[in-house]
Each structure stands twice: as C-alpha cells, then as structure tokens.
Image (cartoon, rainbow, N blue to C red; front, side, top):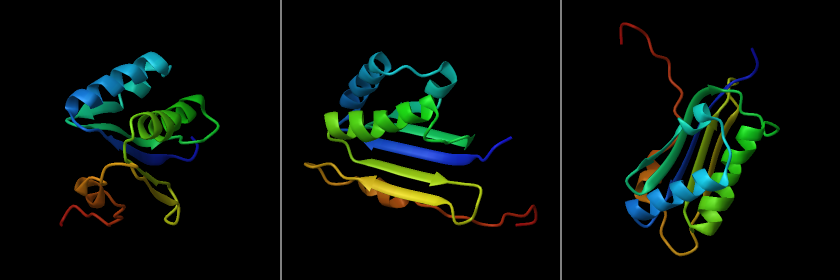
Length: 124
C-alpha cells in the first residue's frame, strides 16, 4: 500500500487573469497524467494543488513535476508567493513552507493555512 500524505500547494498571482495565463502556460510546459491535473485548480488569483492520500515521494516523476511547477515556475517566473503544506501518516511528519514573492506581500489567506490534527467522533 505504501506511505501516504495529504499535500497542498498554493501560488498567488496579481489577479485572476494572470493566474489563468500561468495555469495555461503550465499545462503547455509540464506533462502530468490527467488524474494529476485534476488536483490542480484555479480559484480567483490562486492556483491550488490539493491531494489526499497520495504517495508523495520526491523520486516520483509527477511529484517532481508538481514541485517544480510551484516552486520554480510559479514562484520564480511569476513572482508568486507559494505555500506548501504536507501531512504524512506519522504524527511528526509535517511540512510547512512559504516561499515569499520578492515584490508583493504574502496574501493574508496564507496565514489561515496551517496543520491542525484533531480527533473527531460521531457524537461531537
């Protein structure tokens, strides 16, 4: 079955038109399987990758591509702030990273993205 993780990448853009142009350019530049693209969406000025229960290994081609897309293409080419959060199966396997834009403030919404583990029961 393998070790699985929940993963989020968010990149912000000047406006929704810029985000749409960046996503279109990314689709031309990067090769991903259709099911991988299904986890990448544009919402207003954000491009979001969100996946649950993925085998998130740096050695996998799709994972390398998604990392490059957000951390190099969107961050460096489009000057986006990029937030990355990953939760592994082990309670101490958590990642939170922020790559800040060189010319724009980090969006306030990024501070609302954080790891929160909790116990949920049917009687809550």
